[in-house]
Image (cartoon, rainbow, N blue to C red; front, side, top):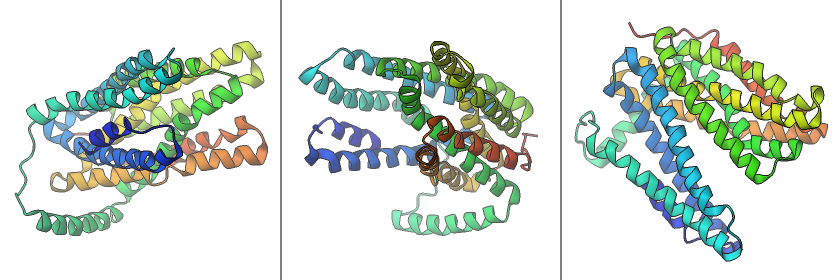
Length: 335
């Protein structure tokens, strides 16, 4: 609800310097609300499905998230594309209400029909005090579990690579391949489709071979496709290079989806029931704490070399380091 209310607030922003700070604050608080909600959403998974089916349900849910986001994106694009002047501004602002309404409608089934593990009914002050103390104990416990700690560090690193790909990919496509806004949007839609399909497909594989192997396969796929995908201008004619880049990018999406969903299923299998939310909180932390490093590294290398192709290569390094660390992680497959 925090996320939804702040998103509604963005409808009242205007293209004026006076609105910059309020808009940034609304986006920040909305994102914080969303990320907090995801922690509890993920922690519910093991209560709703048996361990031997965690992988497929995590993958299906992640895939449906991609497809649901895709549908809402198309709705907003139909509204915005082609509009000009004041109509374009109004259409853009209206997308905030569409997103907020979409979020509200599709969270209702979970709120109304999904069972929850009953809490102890503690007063808020006591709950906060005990919760903070428990988090410190959980942090110490994680530090004493080399396997889990290695997984969290590996996830932090390879997630930085994936987030950088999505955050810098549009800029790279525009500058290096001359793609216009419409082409970039269509490319983004294609990526959502392949990522959603990959998450759903590998959900079944996760339950059969374990989350660690799915993550390793995904990282191998990302590296093997990323190398030719980021070097197409050097081995193909200009006109063909752009289409090859789009093809490799779409194929990359197949492995991005399972990379995300398998991380959740891995944690769902190993987290103790009484501390599950705290463990997922640390999982979320490793996915966000260092996300600035990827874009910062890409920007720095690009500026130093004057070559954006070389500048994008740190993404592959993040994946390679994460893959190397994952080889030392013991998988936790359901008994």
